[in-house]
Amino acid sequence: MVTRRVTIFAGFLLCALPLSLTTFASAPSAAPTSFAQDMNFTLEGKITEKTASKLTVSTGENMIFHVIYNDKTEIKKKDGSAGTAQDLHTGLTISVAGDLAESGEITAVKIAIEGEGSGKQ
Image (cartoon, rainbow, N blue to C red; front, side, top):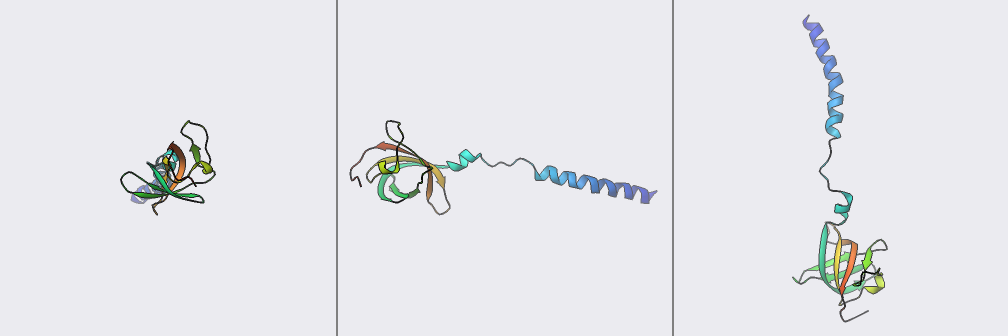
């Protein structure tokens, strides 16, 4: 009788264990949506240097950020029209929304031109 109970219990465990593992393994994660991941950092500042695909931006708090942009980066002019990388130049005040990497660089998803400055390249 004891052997039969052990056999039934062992059979139950063999069936229940894989089910419980798949249930716990597929539990929803608390990870943010991809939109939030793409835009987890924002800043506003003045472009102090521009090279191909990279801006150096200084904020009002004297902090320097390196902003990486590419052809997928949405650039908007002050009037709301679409802009291009050619519209970005030193002295220009911009707002950036993007992904902050562990290296400290920001990969820009959106760049909004806030105001004109001097020193156009």
